[in-house]
Image 1 (cartoon, rainbow, N blue to C red):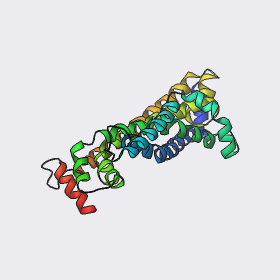
Image 2 (cartoon, rainbow, N blue to C red; image 1 turned 45 degrees about the vertical axis):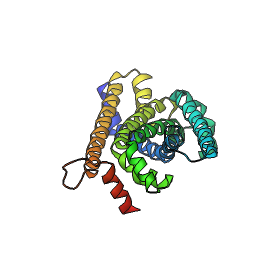
Image 3 (cartoon, helix red, strand yellow; image 1 turned 135 degrees about the horizontal axis):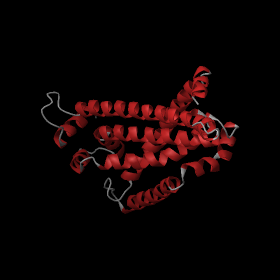
Image 4 (cartoon, one colour; image 1 turned 90 degrees about the vertical axis):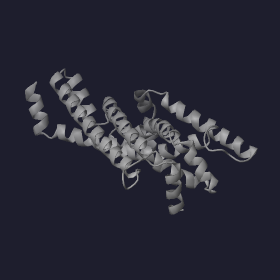
Length: 253
């Protein structure tokens, strides 16, 4: 067993597996946030408890958008990752010309993670105090201005912690993707640990995954604390309240 581990290390397969896992995780997370972040904001803005909408027609339009987008998000969230990977193979083949490998599984990881991220973003922006939003609206701020200058800045700490959870979740998805030949640590664990019955290889891949999770969580915890401090007053005496945020909004308008 130890001989196989040494062979895998000497051949660079373990190192390659680690880098392939990091590559798939970071790229998938980036593109998943590219789609998931605006979806999460739209879900909350168009919610009946979100931003107050003027006019009955606009309320109806927002309700339709929320229902349709919510259905799409819930639909893809309800499909187990492994089933989605198999089902999306034809789509990956259509886009990339192949259904196996790192690139092809990234398409599936984005589709699997974006709805999950959308709900996390929605939960984060819900935590923004309503008094801050009302103050911005009283100044005549548009919906886009409220999103960029109030919602997202105020929700930064929560969004960053949510980013850690998203990265760890997608990291777990990459391990599952090893069962369909996606490469990475999951592929090594399946091919050498499970199929050949070498449990030491399995445990080594688990140790690498644990290390990656710990590093991700430490980095994002540190970032969240840094961002949270930036939201305080320069003196650090007290947290920003609605009036302080309103002043900052007016300054950047």
